[in-house]
Image 1: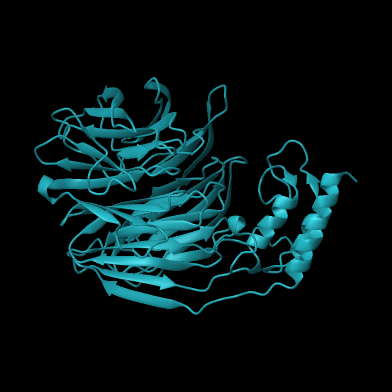
Image 2: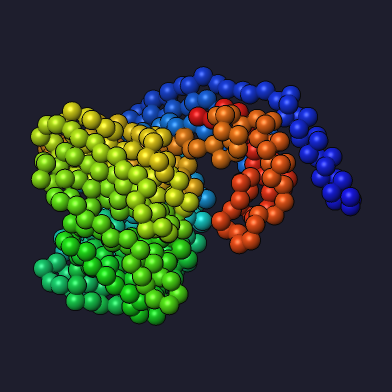
Amino acid sequence: MNRNMRMESVLIAGIISAAMSATSYGESQQQIAHTDDRGMQVETRIGPYMPALHAESSVSTRAEILWHVNDTAAIANSMCLADTADETWIGWNLNYERLAYLQTNGSGTPIYEYDLVPKNPNNVVVASAEDTSLGVVMYSTANGPVTILGFDDSSGTIPLWTYTFDSGYATCQFYAVDVAADGSIVIAAAYISGQSQSMIVILDGLTGTELDRQVTATYVTAVELSDDGSRAVLTESATARIIDTTTMSDLFSFSVSGGGSKHRISRNGLVAAAGGFNFRAFRDTGSGWTQVYSGSEASQWFGGIGLSGDGNTLFSVSHNYAAGYLILTYRVIDLVAGTELTRITTSGTGSYQDTVQRAEVSQDGQTLACISWGTQDNVHPEVQAFDRDLNLIGSIDMPGSPFSLDLSRDGRHLVAGGKHVHANEMGSGGDTYAYSLALPCPADLTGDDVVNIDDIFAVLGLWGDCPDPCPPYCDGDLTEDCTVNIDDIFAILGQWGPCN
């Protein structure tokens, strides 16, 4: 046994000894409510927690609303979160239009807001980077061209930069801007109302300088980037067009039946999916794009299409328009095997339409979320989160209908926002939420719903390199570095205690 192995053995023995004597801690749940200086109600909930023995590996094991903000005038049509920077960006619309910047794990009180009321905007749209502090707000006006402003965590109410589209490009939709994960580039689309003509621009995320542009004879209503910003999918009615953002050249395109949905690209840029009256997914195999799944069912509108970051899992949520938009079907598709893994259905009653709005999937495909308007009999929460077997692991029962949703890459947090009353009702005001999800216990290797000393012994029994090729990762490799070692023991300690 060499010196490093002896040191590791001593460390493991010490860890086991400490683990066997460790105790868990908790605190009673509290709810704190207050009204800010503009009369907005803010609620913050603080719940039980489990302190980690190795803090860097700790994860939240509870599902709860972190904060809820109710605005009596504005509607939250656009929301997004940044994973690493712990940031949430909100685009408030209809009345008192503004950009709001908050901490996802904060109190729900904005750190700062940028007032857009003097601009008299029609749509206020937000997007953000994942791994650095950069949020952008794009807005359209009745008379002027679409404008984009860049902000970060320290810019406050002074934009870092401003970009204005050419005259005439005065209309944009709520998913018409996106930011690369590292904040290096921004992509945005605007179009000339009443004309089939759009402009897509690529901007430098640091300065807002235009790097490239393309004018198309189509309506581009949504854009989405791969994490590295090298590829984007454009929603051109029923056609999904994948482009190389460096050259603005076309890589591939395909169509579904019926326009009106929002097409998706995986974070790794290798899979694209689209939905309408049917849904399809294609993968870049290196030698071309190959269809890996296609589905359709009578009277279904596949308005919720979500892709995992690795491109291996598709979440397809549809409503049945022939049944008064009251029946929803949720499907999990394995895009490697090309098979449907599982599905569930909800069915409500009443006159409200349960229209599907958005679906999201975590990087690894283990956490899925979706939003729909809700039914009059409230048969299910408007915001729902599932595991890959479609077990409900988190939900928000909103008073009205959600329009916006974002899920963090690791599946630990989601943000959602919308209207304070049902979308089929007249009324103003909106609600936004930050939510901490209850995740499966990856460190519970023994499957007894608790992370304890038995799981450390299980890791020791799996010690060593994963079989080649890796990935796929082997049992016990919690850190996904293709070897089961001391880091995986630290990961177990970071998740110590009962599973949620």
